Image 1 (cartoon, one colour):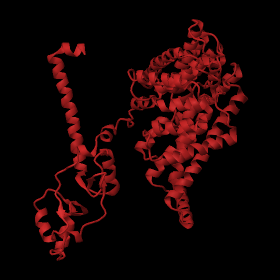
Image 2: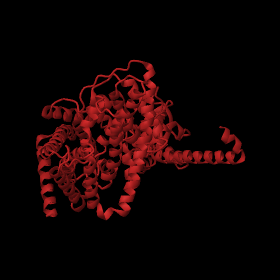
Image 3: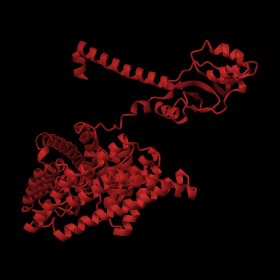
Length: 598
């Protein structure tokens, strides 16, 4: 069956390729068309998933006051979902974003149709049960899979397929949250890992296309109703720093708790995950008898917090604690569900709690909802580790730009302080726990910060353009280089190599000038550019060396750089750092009192 399916797909690929060749379309045109198609498809899938969940929830009332019927239906949905995940579709578990990042870095963007389509089915089932996880993470992984499938169906290159995965990611998030700008930034900041990514254009196009599609199918309203907050006095700002500090502590604490419980569950409860889901859902339903607000992803509860309608401190604290624990428990079972909405929920509750405390103590008259709003962004920054995304996302979700200063202040505080407690986003830490080592944002930092000037060779052997080939052959035998710039009046005329000179001499051209065999097309780089870019140019142009030239005159030779020079310089850099550390340790041992006073 699998073999027959593979043959059918290959046959379809051939037909598509013939059709593309018949239309005389180039690769860039096909990629642009697929970008639009992925954006449109992402909007359709996001709306379909959202409407399906809302329809089932409305039909079965799984997020309202618990009853025997709704409990049985919810339990059925969640058990069928985890059964399908464990038995047939193991890749469909969790939020999907760690697997998405893994597909980009380890599998060249390859996500199979079966993987993302099964993710769609099991996510609808699990999230319709009243479980506490969110739909945004699964939506993103599903739409990224759509991009991968279309890229492979049209036989695009690996780099183009990876680009379409990023395009699908942005489209899914834009449609799920109705936040196209934040979707672009999140894709670059968290998934691609580079805010200067070359795929920025396609990502923007897909995010806008998906957002417009979502608007057309579901209306253009924001996920959270329009808010009207205003910062009256500058002396209110310190309270938002408190919000940032609280999120900087509670966010990493939750991540640590999640990792510890996941480790415990994997070690002792791995074989009993169906029972774990069963008892977890019964526990959640039991808590719902205290207040049904604990059921579901919590979007409507966030809206109440933003409108200062939650009231008692005890209720807000209870909702925060329940979400803190139940998100951990359900996510650790491996059931399909995302962390975006739970993170925003816990942030809103944290902010609302501080706002209520300030209000009850008559310290501040600002609406509690403003604190909840700021808390959403600050908690997101401390857990997801994407501060730019968190600021823009809160703006787009609420369409309220009047609390920009408190939001930025709390976000910066939360992001910087939370670094003391944890490193990397929750997705990176989950992947590390599973033995999957995703690339860190700092991986390319050293090569990106070091410049060509630090590694280039300035003592370059050159050849005069009027030198005869036979004399050049004698000269190069004494040199350690294999390639040579050909100079004319002190400026670059062209380049030649040992093989070129040897072949010309063998052809009997010994009396000819070196200028006759010099290649005029020169690949160069500037001394202030990064070693990472130099590596990229060496690979892109498939050359062994680059000429380092002046920005004032690209015919003026400053040196050359090779891959070996880069590697050697990188090694010296590491050695220098190591020796510096050893010197610091030695000084501390010799003068311990100086290290304590500093």
